[in-house]
Image (cartoon, rainbow, N blue to C red; front, side, top):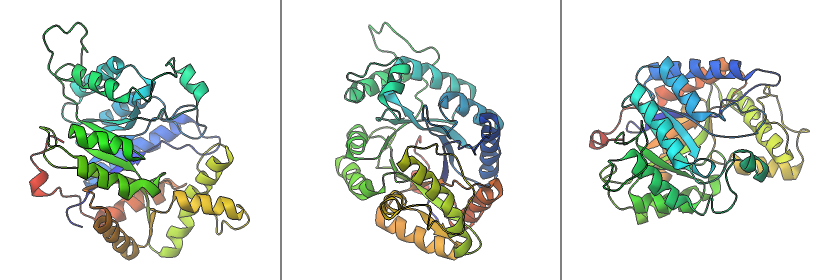
Length: 341
């Protein structure tokens, strides 16, 4: 496990009646904390019109986190490309790269991350948004790369910044496209674990080397909670369990305090649905998590883990990241040191 890189995926969760500013301040504290522990990246998601998540203005948050840190890479996990014009994304991330050179990542997702009404509110057409993903991606890559003869529109800033792009996915579509284009691929096992292994296999089978990524570079985001004992970790897990239960019921997904037992809070079908969403969660004492993480890495072969640690109390979250860093040192393998990524 010494070669696994550790990173964080943050959805900037709010507690009931908590202000967005308070949740964002907690994310800043978390980023500063994991930076000192040697974590490689701190990524923020994009979600819209979801009560309980304060990550809608993702590019703004990335700039805020990057300004509060010094060395850790900060990026999107991810920007939902169908929601935005490629030129706008290129300008935003070109600006971020200009301010924080060598520290900005652009993770891109194909799903809108919202419902139809929210897509309308984002002023994007519902026609062709998701299906046009490959064309929009190529347009974005052109805005971030070297200008070509006859080009009429330029991203300023953006052009020639070559902000590193990763494709995110929860199915086989982005896995195959990432392989075809020779891009890194990150799988969202924190909410779609059932497709993890098929997507990773397809990515590696279709991979074609590129200047950015000479060999496949696979990552996975998954729930991780490390506590002094297995029993405490299982209790802390009831916070994300309550979140997925609320999601299943169409309720706000705010962070709720842990409970001693989930029995009585869900019915059998809801319990099965929540367990299915959290089937790749790695929780327990340091010894238990070390064993589970080793098994996960052997099974998936991913080079990087994005820990999604949604605990109610900030102290539990920071302790979990600290214990995880002790279990899995974040040194990058020597054969990956040359990668631009």
